Length: 395
Image (cartoon, rainbow, N blue to C red; front, top):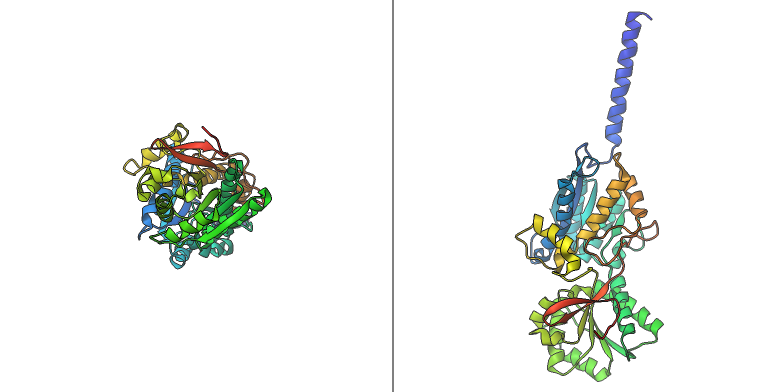
């Protein structure tokens, strides 16, 4: 072949190779380099709710830091990018937009405030960005199923089912009362409770609203007392649960009380209620494998304290860990040629995966993106929170 022709042909192939590389780089999903995987996270980092935001995010961050220290995933280290949602729907949606458009993250693992996360839900769907909810419990975030949205946090409906299962296992429970907030969080629990009670043939003796930020529960306590209920569901947040239990003790309403998982830090509830006596006949649902300080939590505790040694250890410290483990497992199984589609396929094929401190194994499918549905019951006994399992026991 003539030298000039060979030269032109070589130049052609070099040009075409360059075009191919440019096309490949253009087509690649954002947030991936040969050395890093960029994962976005968001939550209340400022404002009054930041008290809860940082421990939850730090639990997930500790898991990612541990993976990085062990060499990363297929040679890539996880780079965690933070944005502040302030537990506000509009600001949370803006934070998610910024993670996707400005930071160009590969996927997102975040969100503590249910209403705020739900407000941002369409961003993940429209931009086709995989999202693992961190600690938001609103059922409608992850159901109906959408290809891009997953959670390992027990939803309100699943929490309500755990509460009903426990009450059904208690002896001589024929009539129950419900104390509830008037919001989406409570509604998800209560719908599951209604259904469970109906299936069990247990009557609803009283259905009483108790609003957020209330400072007195006299009216609600007396309503429940007059109903002669055999047990009481508390679908309330810790502050309001403490107020109700304080006034229940004052007016001789003895329970038993079964509280939603928001109350699993029972020592804090007892302190707000005026002492452990107020929780003498109180049980709380939990989606953790054991209370803080229990042998079951040893590994997760050591991981958290290694990376955040100055943090106060509390139940919130562990909320975000199971989702991070699910993300890591999917990233590994998706392989070194990483794409968002491959991660979603890996997530949807997750079977009995490790959930860290959660009371479950993680399972996802194409028709179920709520990967960690089960829980158990805790009780305050002799000044300590103890796990008693999923059903009632006299021990």
